[in-house]
Image (cartoon, rainbow, N blue to C red; front, side, top):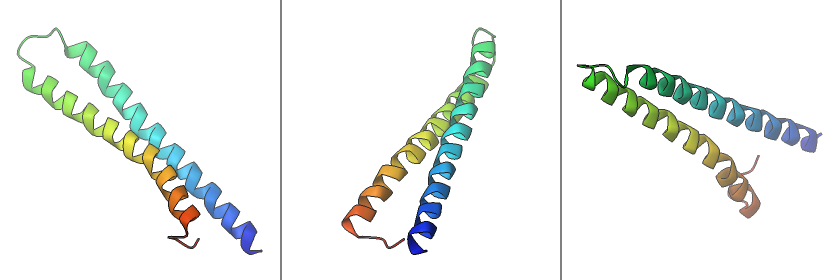
Length: 83
């Protein structure tokens, strides 16, 4: 029974990671599309800079979501956490 609960918890966490990666990736793609539309427009420099910072934030979100699962797996393997 304990193994079944642990497996369900692991699956739930993995699906959550996939969702975070997808959401952040889609946000970055949407901002890239928007940036492409405003890139050649005059007098929108502050909007372009803000959009670039948004893309950086979404990229950071993708990186954190991608890195957290292997870090958690490593911690479980060395016994730092009990699931």
